Image (tube, rainbow, N blue to C red):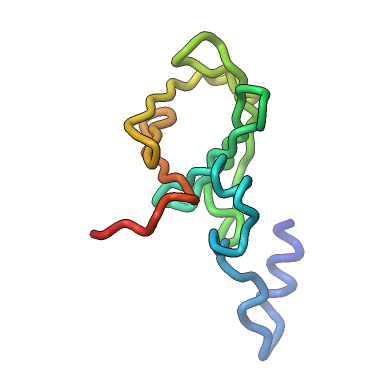
Length: 112
C-alpha cells in the first residue's frame, strides 16, 4: 500500500485520487450501524452479530489498522489485536469505545 501511495504521490498533475467518506452517499443501513471519531476512525457494527469492526486512523488520509471486536460481557469487547475495550453509549448519536467518542453517521448534523 505504501508503495502505491508513493507512486501516486510522484505523479505530476494528478491530485485528489481519493475522496473523503461522504456519509450521505452510503446506504441507510450502513450509516445506522457506523460511528466515526474526530480523527476519522470508524466503529462499524455487525448486523445481528453483536460485534464491531474498529478501524483506527483515516484510511484515506494515512495508514490505518482494523480489528474485529466481539462481545466479552457488556460493556467489554475482545478485539483481534489482543486488546479488550470498553464501550459506553451516551445516547442514540454518541458512543465511547476505549474512551474515544464516536458519532453515528446517520445522526442529523450537529448544531455546534
